[in-house]
Image (cartoon, rainbow, N blue to C red; front, side, top):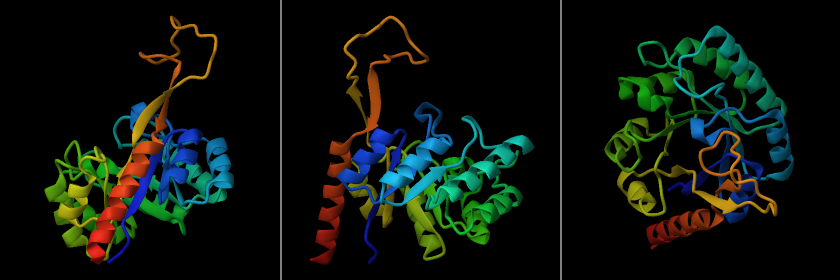
Amino acid sequence: MAKISMEVCCYNLESVMMAQEAGADRIELCANRHLGGTTPSFGMMEVVRKNVQAPVMAMIRPRGGDFLYSQLEIQVMIHDIQMAKELQMDGVVMGVLQHNGEIDKQVMKVLIEVAKPMQITFHRAFDLTPYPMKSIQDLVDLGVDRLLTSGQHQSSFEGMKMIKALLEWAEDRIKVMPGGGVSEHNVKEIIEYTGAREFHVSASGTRPSSMKFKQEQVLMGTTDSEYTVEIADPRRIAKFRDIVDQIEMENRT
């Protein structure tokens, strides 16, 4: 049976470095956590690639909101994929839908052709499609390597039945990775119920700023504080790693 792997979603360089140290098998590199993840900058990808040995998947998403993109936005995505390839990312994470919510196979074909030979993950845009079994067949037809999904529910825990059905249908044709609401409190049950061998977490946390002088009354776009830094919490990542190691040990006995 394949080893269980953990992908950690990271929105800043500090999180990437801590995630690798804490045992992440793969990094999903994004910007703008509060938008659900958008394309990271050229500088971020370049520095991460020079300092991280773990595989890195770059998010390709030009904005927050829906996954119905204009022709100009698709041009942005093409250039961002080319940038990711130039910077030797291991793969890209993307998804495009039509007006009716179905996967836009025509646009995806173009993007995938640009991305080759990098790995392709289709992200949770899948969870907004009307016909999940048709959609996963579309992804197989397109040659997508991996599907990130919460099983068309708000969280992977709530969507476990759908995730299990997708995995059983997929067999070896495409990897199905639960993501969205996966925590150290439910990951064991999700893995054991669905049979998933990959899972995706944010392991989100915060740390206080190291600033000595603080102008607390001035906010730069947040409703909280400029003196709190959001991170992927290495303690949570290590806890996930411990749980996975325990599951694999139990499977061997």
